[in-house]
Length: 140
Image (spheres, rainbow, N blue to C red):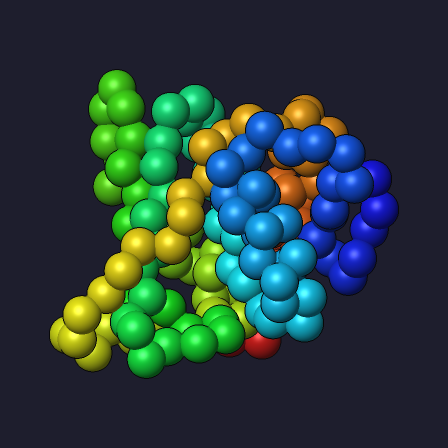
């Protein structure tokens, strides 16, 4: 494993579909920003923070949006949905520097995190999101 910025990157094989998509994107466009690591980190943070093992974090984007722009963030959880999860995920993305704006135009869903991460990755993700939220709340 190697650290790059605040996000953790695995140099060994990964089992998460979002990380596979990130690796595929980086092999073709090495300098292009992608939200895959943030989606995984927020997913792992939600699981740790709220004790929900089965959840899907859906991040939608308009076809005209790029970089850190997204149209919406929605969390679906089983066996019982929580009304706290979507607002918490939205706040986490804002703390990570995302602009969330739904213009009503056509959207597509970004790859969700399948949750197949090590405990080390989960702990790192939790600390990263908590730090971002603490800093963001201090400035907002």
